[in-house]
Amino acid sequence: MKRFACKYSVIQFQPYPETGEFANVGVLLVCEKTGLLDFRLETRKTSRYTAFFQNLDVKLYRFATINLAREMERVRELVTGRDQRDLMAAFEGLIHPRETILRFGAPRVVLTEDPIAELDALFEHYVRHGFAKDANYEARLEKKVRESLKGLNLPAPFKTRKLGTDVYSVQFPLVQMINDRATKAIKPLYLGLKTPNAIYDHADRWSIKLKRLDHFGLKPEKVLFAIQGPHPGDSTDAKKRHFAFQEVQEDLAQYAEIVLDQDHDSRQAIRDFAIQ
View (cartoon, rainbow, N blue to C red):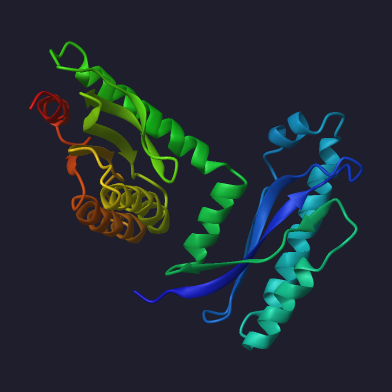
């Protein structure tokens, strides 16, 4: 699939310039090749900001974000169907430094197959903190794996351990050590993420980690990924996520065994790996 280079800027709320503190409230994104200029802005959910900034008048926040949203909507309509120079000029004009309580961060570049989906993912990450939710999913998956290991008669227990050297190391939540050698490691991996890019990125991080450990001769003798993937569906978005999930499984399988949390026998497969 073709990937497009997009620029984006994170919109920041800074009601008290004296302290330098700010909170992310939105994302503005432009893609020259597709002619897209669009944004996502948090105009309704305010509890996070009133909790962070003491004595903040919520009406001030709503007034500022609604006005900015209207300005960006106006600019978006003006450049729709215009050439790339107008599009980029509009983006640069919006993010130009301003003396207001809403400002734009330095522009960044991202490559994506779907600019609109990427905008949603960036908003989820920077504003809604979707990564924290994903971490919670992975923590729950780790708890299920630990429960599967209970009651087993093992030569050594599985414990959290960092493997590697001063040059390079990787922490695993579950490692079995026998005679000072990492014989087995289990890594619960949540891949039910919201976008194909997020699925690729999270899986790739672990493929690279195992590849590098293997290069240094530090990879455990056996590694298991206990994986939870995206929910199946017939929508275009669900199919894209499933495609990405299938691809990353093939990559991960080069370095480790895989058991899917969706499988009814996943608990037994984890126990078999630990025992054998």
